[in-house]
Every structure is written in C-alpha cells, then in structure tokens.
Image (cartoon, rainbow, N blue to C red):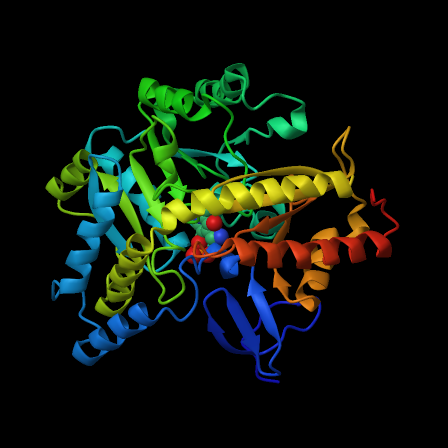
Length: 445
Ligand code: PMP
C-alpha cells in the first residue's frame, strides 16, 4: 500500500476536510476543537482570511527567488518585523524552514564564530534532560529524550546534559530563588567538569515544550544561567521554536526575564501553520565576525522564499492587529486557573503548570510522592484518544525523559475566547471522567 505515514498510529486518525478559527472538521463532518494548535503551531487560528489573501497576492507575483540571486520584499520586510520583536542587539535574522533547521543553524553559527575568533577548542553544546530541540542529527545530539535519541546512537555525537529544573518533582518551591540557583548552578558544575575552554554554548527551552510539558523555570534560574554563560564565555541559545510568537504571553519568552540570550531560534508560531518557516536571530557581533571571515558556511535552499515570508509578515500583522499576545496572557491565566481547579476533582492530576497559553497538566499515581501512573496504562495515549472521540485535540508525551509519567499540553490558538475555554473544560472533564472510570482511578465528587 502506498503511504506517506512512517508511524504506527494508535487509533486511526480521521481525514481532515477543513479548518477555521480554532475548529477543524473531518470528512465525515465531525468537529474538533484544536486544543493544542496542532503541535503548538497554529497560533492565530486556521484559515485567517487576511493571511490567505496576503499569500494569494504574493503567489501571483513570485513564489521563489533563490536567496543568492535575489533580495525579496517579503523577506526584507519580515526580517525587520522579527528583529523589532527581539531584544535590543538581536537584529540579525537568518531564515530557515522549520525548528530543527533553526537549531542546526544556531549550533553552526556558534561554532563558526568560535573558530573565526580564535576559540577553536570550544565545540560542546550543553543542553538539558529532558529537552527537545529537533530531529536532525545535530539537533538530536542536544535533545534529552531517550526514546528519540537511543535508536540512533552512536550516529549523533552525544553532548553534555544537565537536569531540567523539575522543582515540582523534587519537592522544591519554584518561587524560592534558592531553587533557581540550585538548578542553574548545575550548569556551572557541568562546565567545570567538561573544561570551560571546550564548551561553546548552552541551549535551553525558556518555557519547556513537549519534552518537559510547559516547565517554567524557577525564580532566578534564567538570570543565573545568563551570568554563568557570560562568566565562562559560552553563547546562550534560547530555543523559542515553540515559545516564540506570543505563546507564553510575551512575543518572545525571553522578555519574561532580565536575561537576554545571544541567539534565539523561532519557528512554529512564525508562519503559524500557513507555510513552513523558521528563523534564528543572532547578536550582531557574532554575525559581523562570521561575515568578516568570509560568510556563514550554511544555508537551506528554501530559506527565506517569498511565499513563506509573505505568510510570516501577514501572521505577525494579525498577532498585532488582534492583540493576541495580550489575549494569551488573559486567557492563559483563566485557562490555567480552570485546569488547576481540576485537581480538586481528580486526585491523579499531580501538577498544572505553564505560562500564557503554553499550559500542561501531569497525571500521577500519587500526588504526595509524584509517582507516575503505571507505564502499561499508557495514559498519554489513552486520554488523548478519549478526548479526540469527544471532539477535543490535546497533545501528550511521556515525561521524565520519556521513560515514565504522562503530561498533556493544552495550548489552544491565541485567539481563544472565554466561551471557548468553557468548551475545552467541558470536553476535558468528560474525557477525564471516562479515563478515570476505565482505569479505576478515584474522582472526588
Ligand atoms: N525545538 C523545539 C523547542 C521544538 O518544540 C521543536 C518542535 N517540537 C523543534 C525544536 C523542532 O522543530 P521542527 O519539528 O519544526 O523541526
């Protein structure tokens, strides 16, 4: 049988017919509320007429102009728009077509910068466990998620990892600055163990994505990380592939802290599902040094094509026009409170966390010990299937390095309204009730 699916799927997925706003319909006419914006991608909702019109206009003019042959108006315009959202100094925008490409680009520009500035010995990139930075071999080396990395070892080069700041599992208070210091200092210890002269960069999802389930750094963590990177001469890379574009209630998550990175990677919410698009945004002196040495020895064929960039421009304009970043904060606060209130009804919800509309809940066997549900219950698959049947799409992963635990991301498009949050909650309660019954888990009435 001819197929483009290289996966074993659990329950058979329906065939998509159309999508509008926060809803999607299959060919049988069943409606789904897109409670995870696809894979945290469709931030502005589906079929936005202004974006479609802008793309149509661009399509009539040109869809491709090779980056070494032409400048294009959409790519120039988009680079300026993105840079305006980034922290001061981060002004150099390099286009790619997705998140993994953005991460590869960040590693390579960091490395080329080191080699052209007399720091040839620096090549190690420290990341966290768990983490997700992409599926290409370079990005995979930084990904701390055994089920995705182990089958490919030793094809990719293993890179040093430090534990993610999972205060909620370790019985520590995330609001206590001592907690932030405790986890951030693990970076310093790792740098010293590896030999500071050999370490190039540290990469971090500022608010965790699928890997940690919306893990928010404890108080003081990001600032201390920044200080450590500066002290030991590491470049600090924020992987904002998922957090960028307003998802956490700031255009870039970096704006939550006084801790500016040297490189930002960005993709999912950039063209928000209207086209493959990504970027890395780089501190000017890094790019200047690389250009002076002859230029960045890297680039993808489709990078910065005018059609993708026209989608990006239109998406950023819609985010601004509809004030979606503010809505992410307002609706995120509401949705998080509603999710947290579920803990009263379901003792098997161990944690609710996140920032803006990047939110997650984690299921456990025991909230006191945070022991995970039995592995063979496969909660991360089963609850998603039940929700699906009830018309709600959510996104799940096994947490704790993919070996145990189950978390669920609830990340609707940033255009969500209060009434639509009520719909999410109604379908979620129905689904959790069903899941509890099926698995003989308690419900508090
Ligand atoms: N980094 C992060 C933080 C991500 O969430 C993802 C995608 N889940 C990637 C990188 C890889 O992006 P892509 O799938 O577009 O290659």
